[in-house]
Amino acid sequence: MGLTPNERFLVFRRRQILMGFGLAVVVWLAAVVATHRHESARQNLPEKLSDAEFWNLITEFSEPGGYFRSDNFVSNESAFQRVIPALKRRIQPGGVYLGVGPDQNFTYVAAFGPKLAFIIDIRRQNMLLHLMYKALFELSSNRTEFLSRLFSRRIPAGLPKTITIDELFEIFGKVASAAELAKENLDAILQQLRERHHFDLSENDSKSIEFVYNAFVSGGPEIRYSFPNQYPWRRFPSYSELMLETDGTTENGGDNHSYMASEENFQSVKSMQSENRIIPIVGDFAGDKALRSVGRYVREHGATVSTFYTSNVEFYLFQTEDWRKFFNTVSDLPVHSDSVFIRSYFNNYGMQQFSNPPAWLYSSPPSYTLLDSMPALVTAFATGRIHNYFDVIRRSAP
Image (cartoon, rainbow, N blue to C red; front, side, top):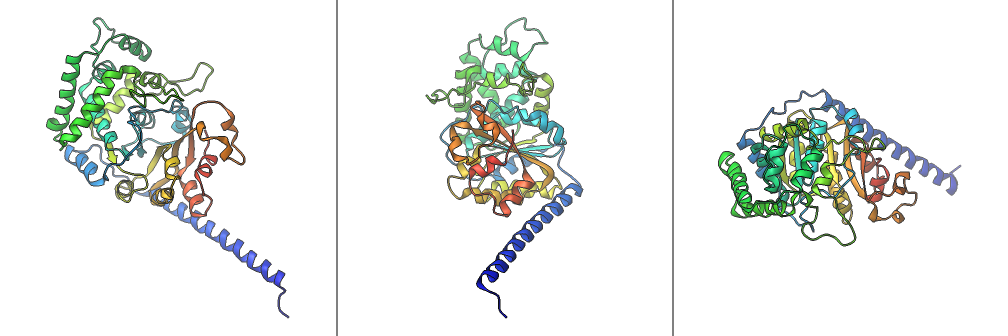
């Protein structure tokens, strides 16, 4: 005797559920196998890169530059240090760091101690900004010299050798920029890049570096994300404010982990810059070349991506179907079981997008810095549990 329509439907649904569960198990097992393979592989990342190797990675991995609405001279994320204490307990030094945007990446690099760092940004100007920073780190023996060169403000006579970062910014905040010094510094930056390193900068590249450097000279320690014009509805933090931020772990604010917070932090970034281990790449997260090339390089060297700082780039990717391209690429990155995304979320996106807002969203900071497991995100994407930007944010945690 045959099954009734209702019984046939129940059998069909049971098969669907079992198939879905089976797919989830397959994806999970694949992630476990891949993670074990990468963990057991012998890492052979270079201790340093030659100038030719460094420049070749930039030129071979980069895509044509794209557009973004702001120059992004500095970060607009005041809470970016909040995740550092937890991540320092979670992440082992020596992996590969991926990031985006300007110099907040140096703070993460100083905190986590990766062997290599790739900064991937759609704007060519961001790559050139990082080359400017590279030259300034190499030319400066300490934080005082670095700030003097970055803003073209002369070092006051009699400055003590031991000085806090708060005192440094207070002092340089009172010193005016010097036009003659700015010209000398710009010439030294370009000479360092073109003549010492023999980087093949075009005339437009040199002009872009000049544009960026002049913005820092004009803005000084008060330079912000959008300079000189500011968004009327929002106040962005200045460079000095970002460097004086803390991790928020105590009532008094907690510890400052910025790359300018201590001479030790500064020297760790300076060392990586001098050894060509911070590599800026021009690329779209949803592109076909840059991020995939970086992933292939990491895999070929038996290493894993330990940290991927995405800022709020995913917000823009979800405005089209580009998010699928990005997560497909991420699915192919060599990762460790503890590999983690660092992403930012701005509360002006609105709580109305959440059917059940996470508890942390009820606090009032203008931005949040969130963490998410990379392997778990890949599994969620593969099993159809990611549909929009807020699915990604909901699964993240401060």
